[in-house]
Length: 177
Image 1 (cartoon, rainbow, N blue to C red):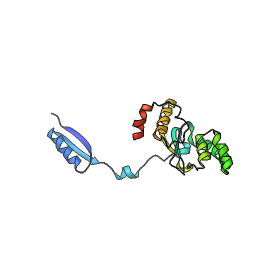
Image 2 (cartoon, one colour):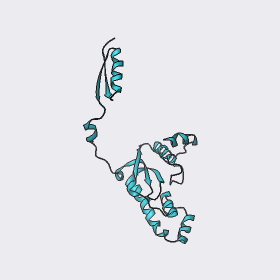
Image 3 (tube, rainbow, N blue to C red):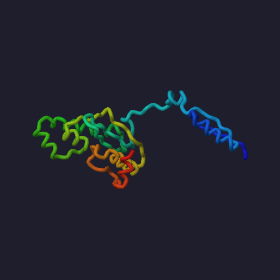
Image 4 (cartoon, rainbow, N blue to C red):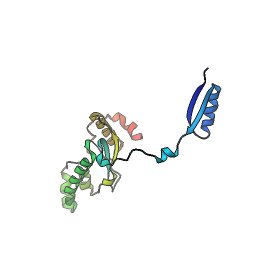
């Protein structure tokens, strides 16, 4: 048997045991640190603001409850979020009285986010917008959007299941995570 060299991350208590097993088979083991200062401190890429991201799956949370809107866009996310904001702001003045609230409950707005704001009298957390995935392929983005909506079952602001029909057999698997 030729001399094999193996490099493993060092984990106290575990690395020593693995090293003994490898030496039985004439393999030399070298350990390297699992976490280094360089890994913890140096991040060469600048963090990109969500406004500049495109071809992504995103979430918009509500400030008043645990509900979340999940969506996808090929366009610039900042522009898409601004569209949601503008529609919410255009309907915001109708939330003053019980009579106007009842009238808005009966009409469906362009965005499910606007429906949530007008029907529940809640405020959207625009600073909490988060990108949850990137995909250049439109169909894959639709699938990931459907998964994001399914994961928030009961907490989703969305009116529908997204652009892709995801079989209900996946519900148990997705809701576990």
